[in-house]
Image (cartoon, rainbow, N blue to C red; front, side):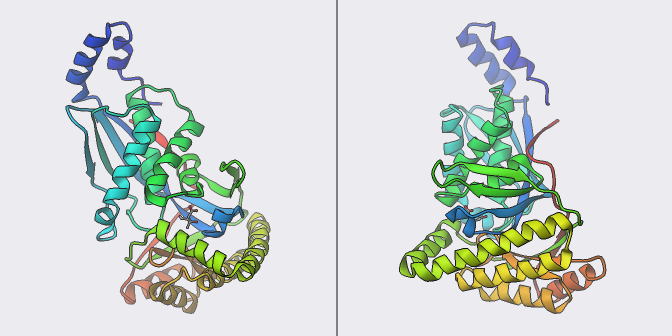
Length: 344
Ligand code: MEV
């Protein structure tokens, strides 16, 4: 843990007005810093909104938030991005930060927030969840609020509402707790239930980026409308997915890579049927499959964002170069990274 800023310790014994004056003077150089990982959903985006379990992982790339008290509120977003992402999300980000400050009872505090790190801000990688968790942890540190990991996760969930409307909570849980998780939203309480998973096999994942920023609130709404339009068809898709995730959990535990790949393909077909894919995602899935990936699917919201492919040491180079050759960006990532943490 980063040591409590000495300004905060000393101010406890001073009358309030001195506290404020001195904290303003010191605030210009006391910086609290925290980071949180992005995420990838291996199984169950969208289905998770309807209370079914999903399997997801924290990835090694992280968003870093630096917070310090300042003369006025400011936000500087220096995260690397898919072109246009930050601009497109600006209003949602501002709503999200206000929500975070409000729930932490820091409304009206003059803070400067700076975002950076190596997580590319893009749809599908949990960019908003990572930034919410990192900001919450940095604010917790700066204002010595003493919140534990579960409370930080609750704050990050509140921040996610600015981006997602009513999120399932899977993204913030990945960014807060890290690791490789089975997540389920209890629809009665609205609470997320998280269980850490262990895979016998090392999963090697290649990400293909469509370069398109999607709007999660809109896509989730469209899916809901589709459910209302044809409840029987939707219910059949939920049943099919339930079998996929059950088999996937078992295959992961046993380290059956080929089976995991086939189940990813089946999950993708269901997402396509749900109408959350798009031509660019279909092209990426097709390229990955033709280049020898064990399985491929869209990940996250869909209608843009990212495709993930399960590869082996032998196929990863071929899959990555085929993606690049077709004009998309590709990236290989390690999974199961650590959750939110304070940085020194
Ligand atoms: C977004 O990363 C995942 C969705 O299932 C939405 C959610 O879970 O809140 C599409």
